[in-house]
Image (tube, rainbow, N blue to C red; front, side, top):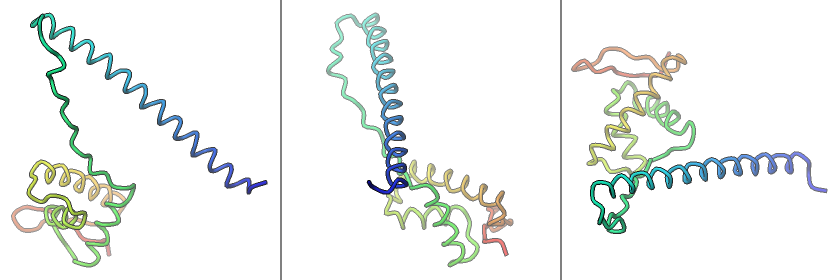
Amino acid sequence: MADTHVVSALRDKRGELAGTIDGLQDQLRQAFIDMDHIDASLRMFVPDIELEEIKPKPLPPRHRAFKGQVTRAILAMLRKEGAMDARAITLRLMAERELNLNDSDLQKAMHKRIGAALRNLRERTLVVSDQGDKGLLRWSVSP
């Protein structure tokens, strides 16, 4: 028989994935219900509307990182480069991950995420912040 710890880990992972699938199916079912309600509301205002002509809008990519990846990248960057402000960290991290630096919405989203990660690191006393140029906080690794 196979190693029991391997079988146990695989059973746990399968259960986790089955739970994820159940949750996603619930979300999909609710999305269909919501869309049916919107369709009915549209028909109240425009009875002869052709709903098939309404094209689906693609969702923007979430630019997900694996758990801890951004935190590790920030710490490595601060160790290597020294003190930096959040804007510089954002631009450098976006360049490393090959994200579009000209997308201002993406820059804002990444800046918020990096700011949250920096505050979390400060709470964990891994980094410190001090007042820098133009009122920006400069972040560095704790001594």
